[in-house]
Length: 340
Ligand SMILES: Nc1ncnc2c1ncn2[C@@H]1O[C@H](COP(=O)(O)OP(=O)(O)OP(=O)(O)O)[C@@H](O)[C@H]1O
Ligand SMILES: [Mg+2]
Image (cartoon, rainbow, N blue to C red; front, side, top):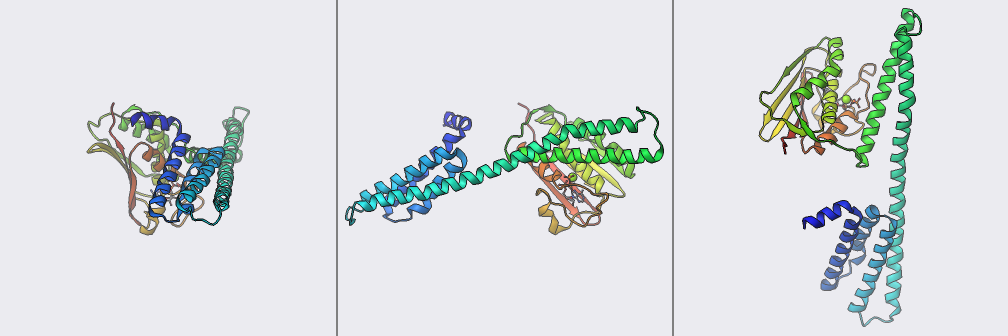
């Protein structure tokens, strides 16, 4: 059994063909036993599966098999039929019908793939020129090409800020695309969660100081090292921290790390504006931003939490939030402790 699963993991196409044939056989058997005619609707399931996952040729092959199955059933079941031509007619009708399904599905899939490829290529192509623009503006701003006045410095600072924002946005879209197409790679290595939180904090320290809010880190004692993708978990914590900073004007941000049974739990709590109960279930959906917005300071795309959730789920953990509107929000995530 294990060998079979390993084989199908390597060759997912064959898995879907196998599944399709199994379903066809099963439905044929049920059909044969019950002498009932719900054939067509159920054959569709197998054709859909194979066409979608295994591609055009496999879909056509499956359509042929389904047509053949109805043909065989017809002959076995209804020897009293008026003319043998009816069987051929049924075969061609079913085969033709399934071919239409196959072509429709394949075209749909190709259109979706094209869309995702287009988005990732465009985003990718934006990155290089953008970093050159950022680099050049920073050099002028830092006076490496001669002195500048205050007004010029303000404008260049604004340009750098916006270039950074665009950079983050492009990275988010690329990440999201990778998750959607299943191409996101993870590197699982033993790490110390407290050091990782500290590293994420270093990246946003300036933002916290600028907003004049306190930061308290309650490091869990004796937390075991566990296997996770350090960069991706830093990305999750950074997103939770930057949300907390963005939506908090006074008070403090608390981070707690604890061991909870066989998991490590990280909590990021703020004393910000909070989230209404009716908005809670939309939080982790892509491109969702909830509540009213001060557009000038609260810019974002609504991808941060959707990406964070994908990352945590990929690690076998959970992520959730609790909030009291007007009083603050706490985000939690867990990582299963894995050492081997
Ligand atoms: N700590 C928080 N306090 C209040 N609201 C929050 C908090 N964290 C998230 N939210 C709400 O959830 C929404 C989704 O957050 P998410 O991180 O996915 O997107 P974003 O921060 O708006 O944009 P991005 O992270 O892509 O730049 C936010 O727009 C905000 O409305
Ligand atoms: Mg965010």
